[in-house]
Image 1 (cartoon, one colour):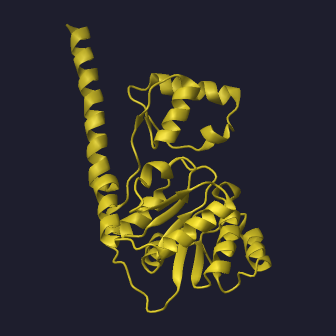
Image 2 (cartoon, rainbow, N blue to C red):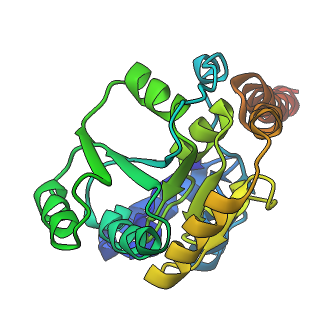
Image 3 (cartoon, one colour):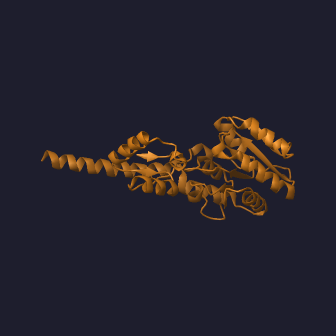
Length: 258
């Protein structure tokens, strides 16, 4: 059983749903959470052990070359569904603060969702027309190519159990700026990879400006993503875990037959 849902942080389950979930967890031979923060929450709520098993990046992202633009702007890109839990409103407000200090920065927000109109209005109200671009929904290939021509990735979620888009960005070589919202704490393990900050406007604005001024080794970031989150690495780990379960079940079945 592998659990991904951020609903455990938001506590949106009914009592009957929680009981059903508890029974499912209890019946599993092994239980995994995609991040340490989620695992800790599940262990606290259900009194069961959870191992950490992260998501992986599809191999095609590692084949995308990082492209150097010929302008002097610094482009942050954010990819995600435009809804309140992703907190793009916080990102826009923080970006406006940062842009008042460094007018060379730009922000691309890729994705669609119920908050799009409100977010566009907020960007306009803060005078960010021309600095913030909304692309709408993009297919997988276009997301990758948009990341490839950007300088850094930013995630501003209130809650995130993992954050696949972060490791996708790192697989292309981008440094990442992310709020401390659960999953990112497992992924950004060094200042060589990016910056973690509190879920707060000033903190995020400062992180954006710090990222803008820092040199990052794109090749080193890509290697980190491959060594820890590539398909080969995670599938090998999962295969071993499943093989262990099968071995135990077969052994128990043999003992019962005897």
